[in-house]
Image (cartoon, rainbow, N blue to C red; front, side, top):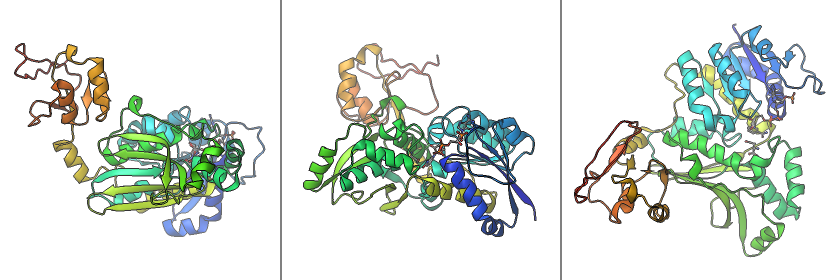
Length: 420
Ligand SMILES: NC(=O)C1=CN([C@@H]2O[C@H](COP(=O)(O)OP(=O)(O)OC[C@H]3O[C@@H](n4cnc5c(N)ncnc54)[C@H](OP(=O)(O)O)[C@@H]3O)[C@@H](O)[C@H]2O)C=CC1
Ligand SMILES: N[C@@H](CC=O)C(=O)O
């Protein structure tokens, strides 16, 4: 029976949950895998902190010792934040370790780079726990919805916010009291600003967008609003007229993303999602509507996703790839009709007023180069008319940077692509 060595980075809410699960479910895991498991090291930051005893495991604040002295097979990152987590993950991948992470801030920003590094080294970089806590949303999308085109997603992705809103409504507690309880229960981040300001849900939405569509909306263009300014009176008044406040993520295939609190009525599919639960409602062209719901934060839920990720490393064969779930259908659609477009015209045409009026109609993917998600939007900016064909627009995939100009007569549109 071979042995699988695991290094755990972080022993906070999530790390402790992972540690306990591995210890408590060791027998079951070993039986499933047909291999012995050994937790070889645990990385912490503050050696002076008092913590539960972790017998027989090297506990260190030195990363080199955690993975250098005895190279693990699998590294579980439960530190959080960008650095040093990013560097530790890169070094673990370079050392040939599979890496599992729950770190949405990092994956939203650097997920592509880390996945590429993993694939170069022939190891896995997986992160189910980074979106929706315990809900197996990423794997469901990748493995079970491959020929579905996902048209839009409506979701509750922050357990702390949903818990706070539910708790205030049902108990009449203040925002501060509800947040304190969410922190005690281990739902909130160490610094809860990202939870209550909507950024945690935004990062998860960015991970989801990359996973589903292969691309993310432009970071600067997305309006992110959290629940930080919500008043108990508003929640109570809304309840009297049958409305509930929910913090929602709304994402569609045109890469429009909104992250904001919304009053919903009892007909709304996410009206009844309460407490720490998250829910992801997916609309597809074939299946129709699917909603996955479950605990979105806390030690147990997050641990469940991490340990299932761990099993998947050894239970899936060579054919299994950690590519985003971009389905063949979505990919084809992007290649054919749903590309981004550059407007053909002089810089002088791109007046502030025209850009502002265009924003009412949809998303400008990139304001500086004027890339659009739809040819029709580019057309509106050009001369207020919709094009009869898409020939007037240059689809932009990887051709970048480009400069565009209009013919001198101004009547005939001429495409000029100049590499800069
Ligand atoms: N809590 C939750 O419900 C969920 C959390 N996550 C994600 O999981 C990750 C961990 O979250 P959580 O457990 O709540 O966070 P905690 O703050 O509870 O734990 C963080 C752990 O990382 C250690 N650590 C922090 N910085 C360093 C460093 N520079 N070097 C070594 N160790 C370090 C800390 O060490 P020390 O103990 O010495 O301070 C601590 O043990 C985050 O990415 C979070 O977003 C994802 C889903 C749900
Ligand atoms: N702080 C997060 C934890 C899980 O990602 C949340 O509340 O959802």
